[in-house]
Length: 505
Image (tube, rainbow, N blue to C red):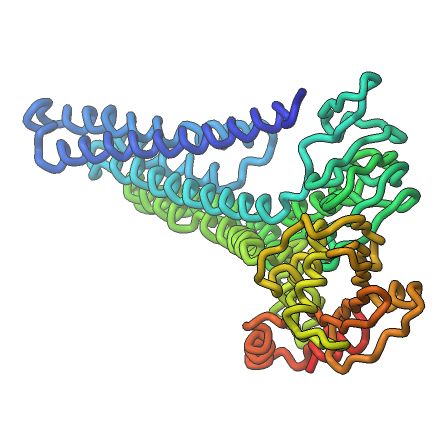
């Protein structure tokens, strides 16, 4: 039995270890650099090795933290040169820092080994912070999109269930989805009926009834019944896989600013390198002071290195995507994030966005001598065996103790309601269609929401109104958007018109 992909785990663990290794490497290099710098500044090296021996000792000692911290930058620069892609920030950092150490060949100048090592250290610290920021953004996005199941249940000839990777499930295989599990692959129900929680994919808080013959999409949660599903797509083409792919590839959809920076860097980097070479060679040829002009050329390279510019723009977009995902907002790419600056119309989904996405009883209208509490009691007893959110909201509103021993012959008509025998009386709790099937016409109700009608021994006992309440901060959010320059806000919903109108108002 397997519940996770070891290759993915291994890859993730390796990435984490490399980040920790880089952090430890920088800490060690910083420690050695501080010690060597102190020895150099306090004259310990001069006292031990004399002059010019102290310069060569300083060269060797500063070379240690430089190589510990910057060997990967040097390696990347070398590999890029071999591939014909020399002009990047790694190349500039390598040339500038190696050049600073090379100034030891000019004894008449001040030594610059400390500066060379320090520049590499600062660069690597910046790279480390970038890696941490990107990692946090990826974790936020991954947590937001945690809708992909690790396994699918395949029934064996002996009736037992084996957990298999969704990737390994062939089209046409019958899988078993138990209550509480996510549907791993798109398919068709061939046995059983249930209620599906599709909130993660559609934002709809009302569970969708599903029975034999109905299509079912991956990523939703099976809430109530055991179902057998014949897969119609491979996992890689299923709904959940496509959604995950869209989010994971968000960074590939670059904004105009990012594309400009990329093009700019391709021109800017070789131009800066050429200018530094002209500065060093030209100044040296004209004045003869080679050491001074080489130092100026190297300084120009370090100061002109575009790494901060090249890194900061895509990092800011990626950080924005990750930060938004923490708040439950999925942005498909940095081009969309940039477009938000020019948005003048915002369109909202209703359920779970402007509303809480959870149901609560908002009104109780008893008839035929029933009180609000007694009507809630009858409905709560009838719904005592149901896991449907509407049933749960009725039980919460009742607040009293529900004794299941008083209930018998309980049946659930998916999407319509329930029937049960309570204290020997036949009780029907459901919508207008269920009431019509019992030969009773449902009365109108001015309160907007989902209406549960209650019949007791054929007598209409009243109705309970259940609604998805508007979020406490929804109104202020609309005000803030208008204050930020949004001219128009629109709400779209598949709910009933009167419910939509009430929420919009």
